[in-house]
Image (cartoon, rainbow, N blue to C red):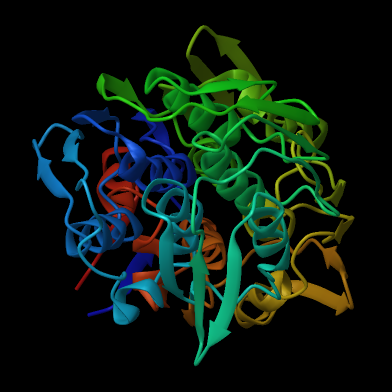
Length: 419
């Protein structure tokens, strides 16, 4: 069945290895369509979003071989064989990241306006505006975005009204094959942007400034291949396990982590009272004897506190005595999880983009449903701490972003099943 069944009350203990970053892997898979030679990607997470993206590029003519060791081998077609299949594109919002690469390499793209989690309005106007600034003609017909460019794209100076991750990635990829220099201002600074830029540079692109407010790209006529490129670890998966350790009052060692990428999460957990220690590419999270305190959280673009960790923190704070306040500045529907947590005994009051969380002595297992990927993760970790059994339905949302979550949790002592 499409659910997790969790028997709570068992502190998590042990070591867990963090998988490759979902959002970096999806963008890099799209960028691989620009490669003129073979590409081998490592540390690719085995999640449904990645599997869908691979199916999409296969339909377009790419030859993709999975090697069974978290790596895939990709040979992009010299010409895209078909438009991305609508039924697959609608499953995955990141499919919109094909627009820039296809326009830049093939001069044409027809993308069904994408789906994904219902966490709020995520307009693509910044994507379209930026690509149009490079010389692309973007039209809309029957739920499709159709992009054309009669000749090579032209470098331009483009300012984003908001530092959108997707728009930054789409425009940056397209600019790699544009004629002349492109300057992108007020761009997103997330680690996944830097990872994508590093991959593009391995293919022969000339991208500078990723991770800062301004990215400069010198266009090149074509891109080559890359013998091997390893995707960065997933900072949100790492954060989820950190919060899971805290809510169960457990003790975990996280392996394959880039501490800098999770610093906003570490800082907030330390404020709560969790002991977090960095050691190279490992983090130790100790909450067994911690006396946890309420905190206030505001989600912001990186390097602020990530919106993708807000639901998990809400679940944990629901078990911390006192009053915590969460302000969601990115997606207006991120608080849907509050109603499900209240079914477990949480006390959460939502007013617009603010949630007030009053800690309770305990959560109680019941039937709840995931409304999106991160809400699903929050309900799972709430179930780990709850008294009794919790059934989390719509597990397919969780499978979109977590590599074999139930297996990892069981190895840490949790009682989790997928009937």
